[in-house]
Length: 264
Image (cartoon, rainbow, N blue to C red; front, side):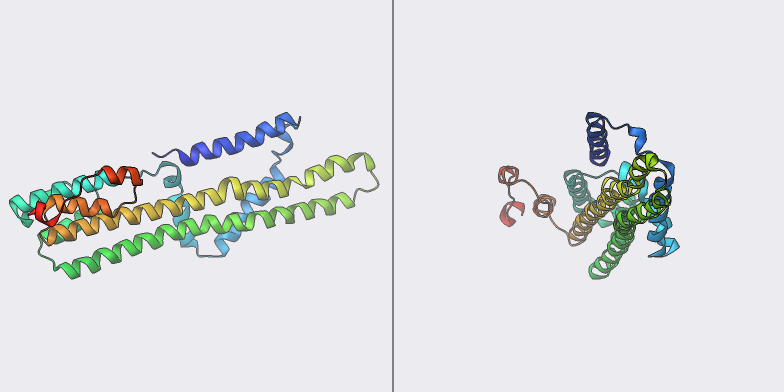
């Protein structure tokens, strides 16, 4: 599990609470139910109104992955594909059917099964590309929901503040209470900005990034399986797949390159 989002949110909220403590502001001063209910509830509701109910349910279904989602290292994926290429080269493509039965990754499982079934290379590429595209659209829809909610939240916070200030103006005959009431009115604006920048937008951005990484992983698997289908030499396949992965220049320079002559 990548703890970037958890660490980031903890530090962000910790910084806010540290500021409030240093300025002598009680944390309970901003933990007011009314503005929190308005901002959080209305923001998610208008986010739902901007799409479909199915989009909203899919977004919340994807929410745990923002915190618990695992990212597979490219080296592990490349190592698996090279091993499969060695199996196919020594035992034939039909041997991949056994590998497919033991493969937990459903995308790779279907790809290997298709190769073992003798599917044409071009047809296999089209099928895998379609599956990657569908998976990417689904993940980006979930990210888009939280991003849109993050866009609505600050404005809804202002609406809450305006409503509270209307109530304040009704109490002008009680000057002693105006200060606390005005301070309370601005809590809605605070929660609008806070929820957008500390919660919704980071979650949306995180889901989008995870979607990009998943597409990269699936693309790597697709290219590897297609190369295996075409009979690519294992070492050459590994070198080709590593070239597809962004790496630090210093690390790339240390990696050996395999030429066509050496691979033969």
